[in-house]
Image (cartoon, rainbow, N blue to C red; front, side):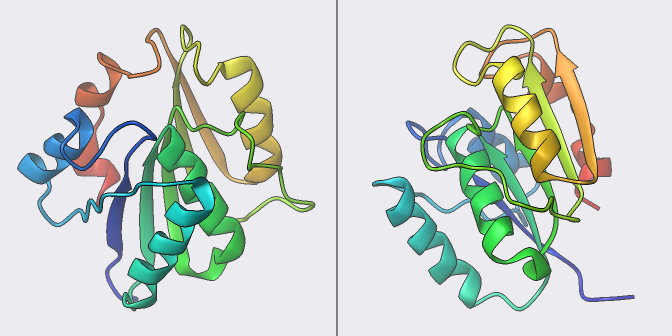
Length: 160
């Protein structure tokens, strides 16, 4: 058995570790690291690189919206470091993302709302399909914030 993974929650562009999802992880899964990010995508990725440089374990990246874009970009740069990804309405339709030439082997779970107007499923799902060779897609009757879906997810099972 390998080393246990270090799990990081990467918040959205206009959120923080004190947002709804960040507070959920702090309360229910205190081992999940939830750093705060600000600035441009590149500045946030640099901060993530700095944080992860000090971590030796494999990484589980949970990314919400812009954090999902960050998680995906980090996995593209460091596929050997990432055990798997949980992408919550990831911003794969935003500037700063283009799918790789060859899909990543890292397993990824994509959870997205059918009523999401910020990261529309018809744009995000095709981008995710060409990015990850092992992709579990869960299209939910929800909006961008996944208000109903997020708290009902089997986080205990997902974070083992």
